[in-house]
Length: 508
Image (cartoon, helix red, strand yellow):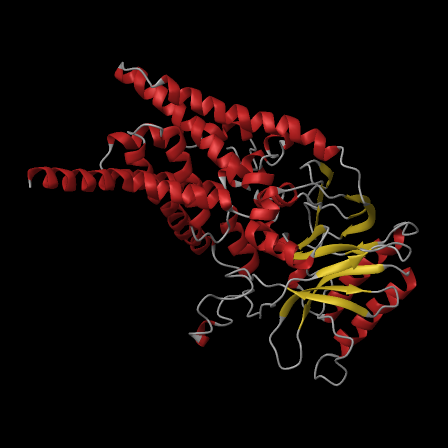
């Protein structure tokens, strides 16, 4: 309930409360099963859209689609089974309000997610509660929420057992929360008031190309989609625009102006040249998403920047491909798996980060970090790419068309928004069907569109430089939580070993 679609973010501190109440009274095995069950049910509710996507994208029968959701939920639930095994002994020891939240962060940090999300993502629409992410990353609010949950669980258990809950621990949980909120209250106006170095003017084209539109593979249908993009672009007032941006996969063909003579590529080359002519007509940079296929290589999911003369300036190939969407896991080892599931591609990943130069000719260009869809979910990848390229902002092109009107588009937005605050750079997120958004370094939304709106938004993106400790040091907080968890879990065994050696020495 704390996540989209309900979006009741204030429930995040009680999300883990039921588990923390129950598991101290259970054996280790039963605690694991309780965590697995709770995590499985939560994942089924959060990721309910997986069943819809399996039907709309790959045309699975509903029975099989629900089976896919069930299997995914069982896997995702294991995370909470592991968490309960770690948290169970810690909940009966002193300073549980620090050690158990460390375990929550540690499991979030190391668990191999397909669609990573964190408890801290719940506050993505509450800027004052996001500011500490420029120190801790998205793991900070996860820690704070878990600390409150431990204190609440301890207080309730103490009342039921008619014993006092240690007051110092309750005060520590309150102090952790107070420090987090106070930092947000101080930092938020500082970031909001930072003067911009430059202002980038963009035309964001959201064409509402749906999943049904994409299923029509004939050239006539694809050319009609290109005409939609062209008409939307030409109807906008581009007189004061630095660049036009189209979303991931918006160009309905492979982009290849140099593929003359390839068998079956005549329409691809023709429409690619028409796109270049459109850019020359507008005299504006165009940043867009398209499939590409270099000669002798597999298909790539690409972002391409065309200059005002229609020539290609730079290209980025997506590096982190989506399993069961852009590739089938293990298909390189077992080639018979390739092309077995409809709409599951066999793409090749890119190998380097790219920042596109955007801006007018009379001033130094702002450097936009290229990010495609799923990639902006990963804080470590985004941070490393930003540092490698020296980018000033993030431009993420996304295609959420397969999700329809489920909660997935809002969830996808939710897990990308923290990148703006963590790195203190603007995030420009453009999608085919919504939700398109511009997020300032403060976490404030400068633009947010609805689903299935066909529109062009002219936005001014202030490019400012605010200090971010997270940008400098990365996931140090998460690593400290992992180390602290391992130390807390191992401490009794270590003390027992030391005591045994001491008694042995004394006896000797």
